[in-house]
Length: 84
Image (tube, rainbow, N blue to C red; front, top):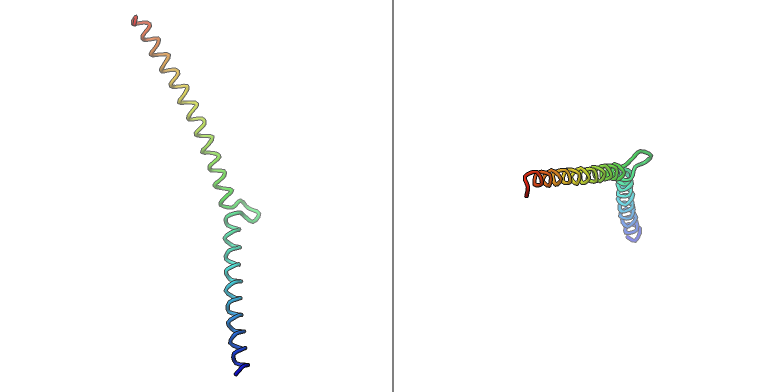
């Protein structure tokens, strides 16, 4: 009877170990997808996209400021010509 219990415990332990190894393997695959394994991973690609968006935002703010300045000057010029 004791031998049978020992066998069952060993089978459960091996089953648990197999599940842990399988989970670790999936985790490793997911980490490689995120971080990359010699090729850029998802995180690197997202960082590049964010950097491009930040550059676009800076340019848009600059263009907006320039347009606002031109419109302001045109309004002042128009007011001066009209005599206000």
